Length: 377
Figure: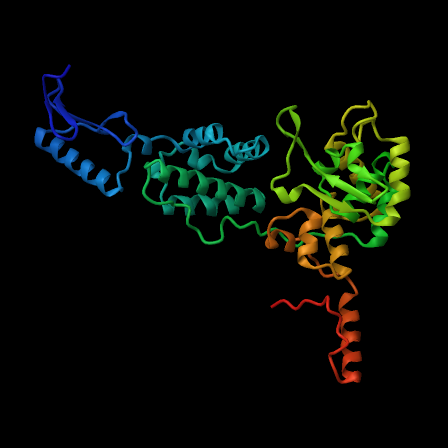
């Protein structure tokens, strides 16, 4: 119980029954906050309040109480209270915290310094975790600590390792035209249209599972991507959502040679509303497509994943002379960098380029060069 108390222009100090002094003030949030520790003398408490008042006026005040909150608790609150975070990304973040960020979860926000982050990151890279998951974990940690800065819990972000958040995944495999044909031949017929739409139209698996029958127009040879089917890994929840960006909603022109397969799919395996359904008539699961493709892949003897078919489709489109803008529109990317990740060198293309250069040498002029050639540094 307090014995003495004193109000001042900013804050309040009072003497506790122990004889020590406690300081409190109304913070920028409008809530009264106590100092994180008590003081031996009234002068010490008053001096602390003077410093707090000065920091608030300068805009550099740090909330010591919030700064002592554990990183794991603060990160979880961030996931729960941020309306811009989707369920799939929140699930990925929680899994990364559980698998790759254990060393940070129990630490107070103020205790997570640059050296602590560097030590954690080095240990994570030396472990068995995948590089993509570790990069995701790093980006999530940096995002959480940026929020802590805005909340005045810390002054600067300790996640400052150059390039640590970049996803430096290795070059993905692509299938040749002949291999795509073999995969279509070997996959269970119900899934042939899915393989073709991924390989020749660049659709994601979630986009394929989200297609309605009305999204496929064989009169105009177009398929409209309007939604993405999401299936959470750690729960049974499945739902449709809009693509990540407005560019994701798009019409994609279908190469004419796919038409017979799509007609057959409509006649034999499509549902009344949804283009892809399971044997039970319900919405097709993305994992069912993955398993069917994996079986076909083993029979053919190729190492590509189903998502690699999207890279294949982008590469095939690029080999026709499509511009980067064309490729962005076809795959539904909003940025040049995102679309560029799907560009690959096509086997044999370099020999065609060398042969064309010899023709230029013989002609003695570059005038016949096609207008579609783009030179990148």
